[in-house]
Length: 148
Image 1 (spheres, helix red, strand yellow):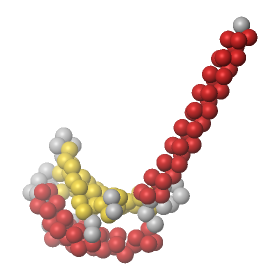
Image 2: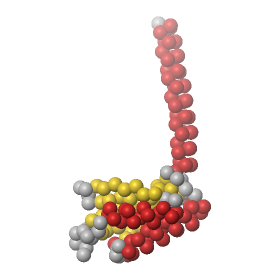
Image 3: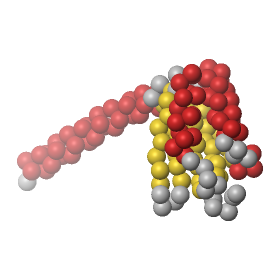
Image 4: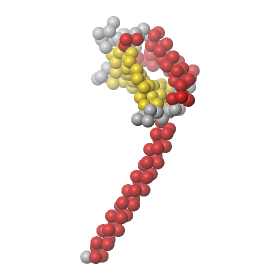
């Protein structure tokens, strides 16, 4: 009986030690990923302003009214910049593929690239602007058939 109790205690101690190692390793990985994905807004400000200027210019060229645009900054609880998000309502005549192509061309001048996805059921198209494999801005276009 004592032998069995000792084995179970050793097994529990081993499992706790393994769990501790896994937890410590996951915390290290999380910290590295967080450091990589968080952008220091002060250092990135000129790049972000250049991207914003190109996006705003293109939205104006596509006759997207200011009232149809909403934007906000996504930050961590410690106020570190993650990305800018925009939700843009567009009329049915808006061709997202053309906008995607034009924006990709505009962003090549600031070493950024664009990735887009469409959700047909929600009538939305999301475009993610990436710099160094980090999303710095997301544009979500929402189709509104009432706008014309």
